[in-house]
Length: 54
Image (cartoon, rainbow, N blue to C red; front, side, top):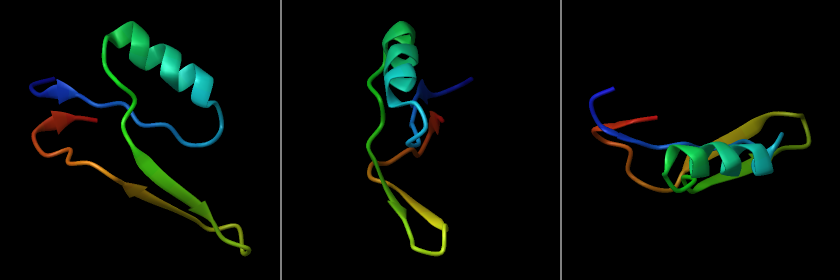
C-alpha cells in the first residue's frame, strides 16, 4: 500500500465496516448506493480516491 487507506461499505453489514475502519484508524468513506426494481445496484463514490488505497 502506497497511499492513504479508504474503506467503503455496501449495505450488507455497515456496523462491521465501521468497526473495521475504526480499527484501521480511518473514517468510513462516503458513497451512495441505490437498488433498482430489477435488482441492479448503482454505487457512487462521493469523494476522491485518487492516490489512495481503497
